Length: 562
Image (cartoon, rainbow, N blue to C red; front, side):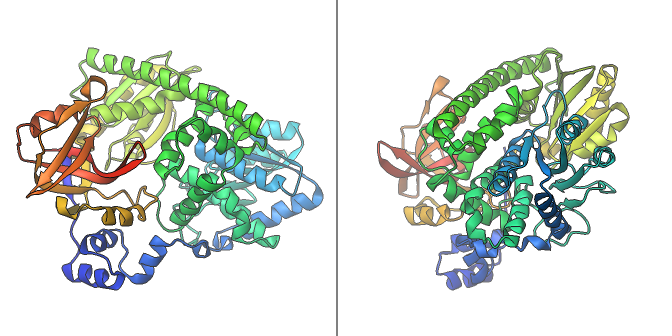
């Protein structure tokens, strides 16, 4: 691991904020590093208010979108709610369809088949709309680049309203309305919403027209919080407010579908991390293994018995996904070793039988292991399809752009992308991608980074600090859980490897007579030789609570040791 320490704010700023908020210097430092430099900003951070959510009509085309939906309802038109097959897409479809159905019956949903149709708006989906008499499609989490598809629909007298959060191309589709805060001509105050967040702004606008307030829409925020967590958008500004209240809904009055998922786990209170690792993979598994519509069915179900059946089905898909993911990761690692490719700048692997639904997860796994830009290919019809993942600081989308002459189609963003190419281009592409990355990547980016917020001492780690840090949540990009570093630590003498094959490290640290304070380092079992025999060591960690048999105690969650 490469340890980097964030710059410490000026002492006078720390002292000023510390006094204004009546908190210690460490808390003031952490807040300043997050751009919170006044009492007012701190109040908004620690006490998010629904009143701080922006007026939806500030978004370009919002008035037009609302007017078109109201016109459709007045005329009794059929409305098709269309979304992608991932978590952001399926939660968006569940949100929009259940809201519209609460007061208008002529609404149906459509999720494209991951394998037959691929990502985003499809010709097949538009044909389905025509065959079934839909004259308005509301596309969520996709569509901002679907220029040809929207034109195709227009020829069939089908209108589009697009709710997207991806960066548009040089021109926009000829839709009735394009709601996307990343549009260059959109002055909406916050442009980091996820697709479900943009969908929520549309129902907020529709609600305003019907005399509803934000309080009438709180029950939809469990879906929005799940999409925010799963889509890895910044948990800052408006997203922080939406995630904060969405988590409250998940933990106090979740929709029946979420309740059915949570009932299968041992969790009582879910954090945003639990949403990302417990709820999101199960929702995603439907689209990966079977069809995304199964997820929408679960998320919109109102009968508990039926929801439990749907949740059990989805649990099976998730288990199948896990098994496949482990199997393919093992095969991919063997391929890298057989081809002597451990030392390259990239990992590019291919097998025609690998399941297309899990290659993205496998690419993430390989990136964790070798820490370099990674592509996992499989056969998809007549072509090869791949999922790409990158390392922090390296733009894999730009790297793919440099290889565009070998690629049929590609899309995505800085850290994750997808592409297709012809099988005969595979070896050429592989060599070209390796060259582009080796020529452009800063070698230090090939070592994972731990970004440390502050240098601390064991004596500062106490339950009062923990109580304050818990109020920094929900954590995510733009507001990560604080990472600390302590120097010259010693183990109390009982350090040991625990878990399967002693993969994890359990110890209790002391420093200058303070301690011992328990610590656990997942997958740090190989660091045991550094801490035994009272050797001095440094540790990077976050502060955590350990619950065991009803007792809660403070512990360090170790990230690395040196």
